[in-house]
View 1: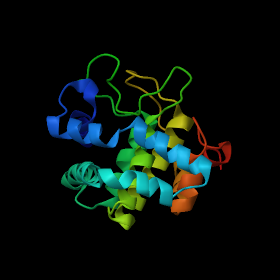
View 2 (view 1 turned 135 degrees about the horizontal axis):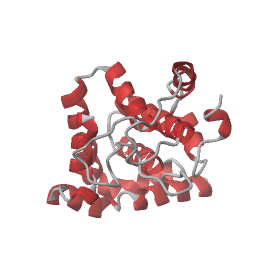
View 3 (view 1 turned 120 degrees about the vertical axis):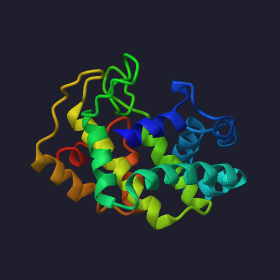
View 4 (view 1 turned 30 degrees about the vertical axis):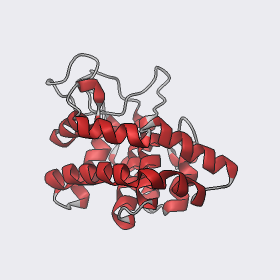
Length: 208
């Protein structure tokens, strides 16, 4: 919960705490929707990854700044403990992190979603990760994080947690393990293909 609390404060403009430095990086990169739009455009045009990387290259400094800031928060809270990082994304997707410090309408740490349950945030995060890696971010580290982003997306799709509910039920342990077994083995191409599906993962990736 403390990780997500800090992460939101640093990166989510909705809480009014994002610094000018982060906003400047957002403006430079067009984050989040500009990056996702470019990722989708190049995927559809058959110019991915080279064309996408070339389009992102002029904004490499801003992309790498944002990537480094994310890693600083991850490392501060988890110190490289991959199981702890995984648990954070799993609990986020399940919507079981009720935080009384947050205002009404935002008390559950989870990805924002529309009334139909669809989210944009997981796609935005994946596209950002691919952009950052293509301009020089650590490929292995970010592949691990990207797998967790996909896992969180699948879990939230399966769980459909209710905002502000203090008692969202967790997924059964066996269901979580099945989703881990699928998503945490994906390579870059498999993650890209998974995120081509919108707004939800392909049903086989939620109910494998």
